[in-house]
Length: 252
Ligand code: NAP
Image (cartoon, rainbow, N blue to C red; front, side):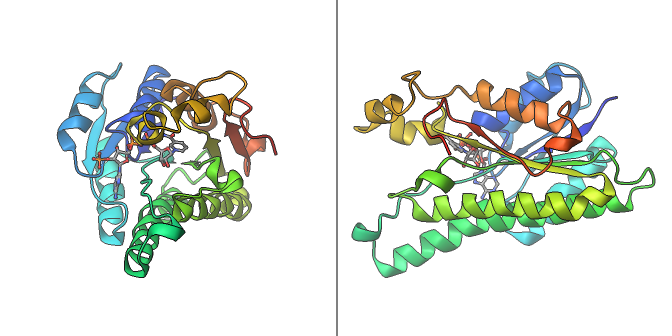
C-alpha cells in the first residue's frame, strides 16, 4: 500500500535522507522546507517514484502549520504519516548569554522544536480522525535527540525541547492507540549534517566522535532508515517507543 507522508525539514540533512528512504520504499512524500523552497524542489526532483510534493512554511507559527498540513493533504490527496523532523540548534550557554538573548533563544527553540511538532501532530491527528477511511494505520513519528537525556550545556533549550518532544510522543501514543494510530520517536546522537557540523567541524569534534565506541558520528541515512521503518513497517506494538540512534554513545 502506498502511503502519503509529510516530512518536515526535508530540504536537507536528516529530513532529505528520510524522504529518500520513504520514497525508495514506494511511498509518496511531501518534502517540507522552512524557507528554502528551491532546495526542497531539488530533493523532490531526485526522489525515486512519482507524485511527490513540496510544501513550505515556518513550523514555529501555528497559522503556517495549518497551511503546511492543508497543502500536503491537497497535494498528496490525503496524509497517513507525519514525520516531525524540522528543528533548530542555537547556542545560548547560561554563563555567557544576556537575559534578553536567553529568553529569546528559549522562546524560538520551544516554538520550532516543540510547539511546532505539537501543532502539526494535532492537525494530522485531526485529519486522520476525520478521514472517511478512518484513522487506523496513521503514524506520528518525531525526531528527538540524545540531548534530552545527556544534557545540552551550550543549547539547554534544545535539550529541553527534545525531552518535551519525547514526552509528547509518549502521551500521544497512549491517547491515539484506541484509534489505531502509532506514535514513536528516535533520539539520535550527533549526525553529519549542517546542524551536526556546527559542532563536529569545531574544536570539540574529535571528542564528540570519541563518545561513540564506533569513533564517529552518524550518517543521515542511519537515522533515516530507523525513521523509515517506524513510519511504515514497524509493528504497531512499538508505539510509545523512543529509539536511541547514537552508536552506543549514551546508554540509558
Ligand atoms: P539541518 O541540516 O539544520 O536541517 C534543518 C531542516 O529543518 C531544514 O530543512 C530547515 O529548512 C528546517 N527548519 C529549520 N527551522 C525551521 C522552521 N522554523 N520552520 C520550518 N522548518 C525549519 O538539521 P538536521 O541535522 O538534518 O536535523 C534534523 C532533525 O534532527 C532536527 O530536529 C534535529 O534537532 C534532529 N537531530 C539532529 C542531530 C544532528 O547532529 N544533526 C542530532 C540529533 C537530533 P530550511 O533550510 O528551509 O529553513
